[in-house]
Length: 90
Image (tube, rainbow, N blue to C red; front, side, top):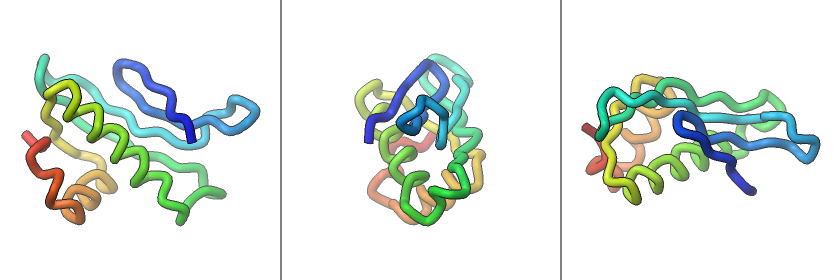
């Protein structure tokens, strides 16, 4: 599984280049992002794709020394279930 990245999104494409899942965020300031949306195509739901997107984002937050405020309901739940990642929350 190869994630694509830009300044405000991490996404996954199928073999035809169609976007099938993403997590989007915006910078609140130079050190903090707001995790706004986590979306997975219905055919992929239940396969852990959303969690892998948030994990990839969390890895980037650690690497870039950034903090996050999750406003996306999935991201809020994910961080509640992963107390080991609380240090990236603002």
